[in-house]
Image (cartoon, rainbow, N blue to C red; front, side):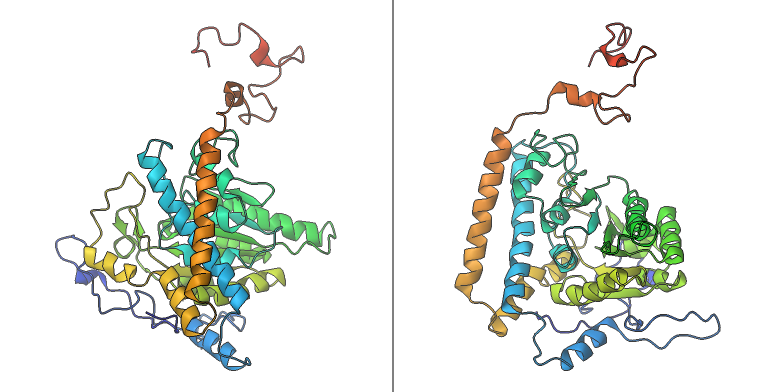
Length: 424
């Protein structure tokens, strides 16, 4: 396995299935992506009567490298940073699984194992002022954006020291300080929020004349979301107003137990970008260096005021949809195929082959992350639970919830307020 330019192949067509059962997985297909080539470097010119001549992502990256002094895609410092962030994400999620099965966290917990190249490849290129909007699979996005592991773990434990004060749990990470606008439990729910954040950046720059406001928003979501109406509405709005946003599709090929190929009329999600007048890009989401090259151009394009980009990162989750999912629907051969393409192993191999790091340096990073997570668990375990009074906060606009009465006092302070109802 190497981090060379990916070979894109057509997705297997629907007739490769029989009796409505999931298709048999063809392990000879290295990547379930598209052979269609896509213009990304030059602006798209839409013409209903002609097809555009385009350049594939892998060719764009390769051509860019040939112009540089070396063939290396990263420096040693960049490589170590990427490796540490990916190890943090992987080890954190493994620790989450342990804590979940020990009864330390409750509800649905969706892990990110296998998809680390997408989070690291995009988010580590952002500035602190840039925003990230995530899904219910949001732990690693928050970590990549700089939210401390102890704050994320405490949130998972439902403690007051969590990044959402223990009220959000696994699916609702939030950090105003780090501009993590939230994880959202319903699919597509976060895309309008991300579009609004991007509009805010543009408004501040162009209307309020804040010249230094070149902030970019990343909206992360999965393949299942791309059949939802809010996705299309926001693509249209972002393109119409040239908003500084990158729509990042983490296509892990499965929407819970539904194969992407069975649920989508055209499984090539990136093609929906040009339909709305923005570049659409397909990239190997198991390759952090390819993701990073595409992310650089998309983020810089948004920062320059040139509008949105749709990036389809084809990736794979190594665990079930959530920790409550026995993961019995996916073909074992398919899972083994993608396990062999582990993005962390690939980066490690690239760094060794190009003498960017040695085994001792990477072991030191892993030891450091182990210590960070041990402290995070200890911190979360010892942290206090939220006060019961928090249940009345953040429900309505006023800080105590339930509104203010005609006398100017909080209605919740009236002893008769809860008469006839269950007491909180």
